[in-house]
Length: 318
Ligand SMILES: Cc1cc2nc3c(=O)[nH]c(=O)nc-3n(C[C@H](O)[C@H](O)[C@H](O)COP(=O)(O)O)c2cc1C
Image (cartoon, rainbow, N blue to C red):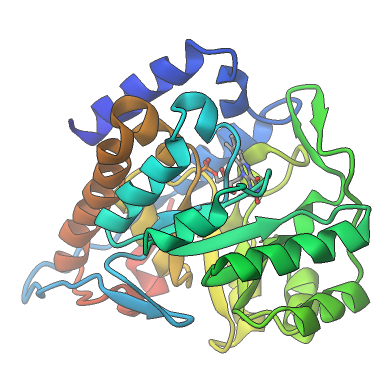
């Protein structure tokens, strides 16, 4: 199945169930439409003479991947799409040489997922019950994940349309982030950074990576797309802290733009759900592989041999 068909079939499948609304966005849904609009604001500078051979393998924070396109953290509603959905997602991502990232709720079978051999990260929300948060942090590490993520942007829980979720969260302080750092021995990522100030504090707290994200329109209304704040965050990271990005990425061209803006990895939320709903683990694998192939075509015709080389000046804003 081709990518467009996977997206259409997956969307129809998920919409036909009572979890369909989880594809929507918070309140006015401005963030959802702005994500697409901002991605579309950039065109790509072609440099086809002396086109290059492209490879997409990358090594990031101790993990070897075949592609810089990974899953963004989600658990809900994967088991509601297919019973063994999480295992199918793991199989599909492993086959594509990509990384799986679970969210809330923390899967009970996280250890079994890790044992599939898929590169694996797991997120924790800033539960108001901080001892419970630290217990979750311990459990995730014991399961054998490669990386651990903290959703610094879920301090007011999450929200889709008018429906508030994750009431049991509150914002974390810099001191608490430092405390978390002391308790985490794997690479630590703070997800939901959307500005220079939080980037500086994340680095001060010892983040190995910053995930620039508006949570796919599931937290606050009128947040910017990551591209609207990437340059200021990249300048704070100074090439020393890894930057990840997500929010509306659907095609290889989108991923190319994310890397051009300075991200090392590009995350996908809904496309993973679409792949799973359209064709199980095969659909998940195809989403990653087809987007990677689209990105490789662009890299070859723009003169970039590997993902880390794609330059910011390859984008033309209009
Ligand atoms: C159904 C759904 C569930 C999500 N659950 C989580 C979660 O538990 N933790 C988290 O950090 N982000 C969560 N997200 C946000 C994604 O990790 C990601 O930031 C976002 O979906 C990226 O945008 P995209 O869907 O346009 O690719 C969720 C997103 C969706 C659509």
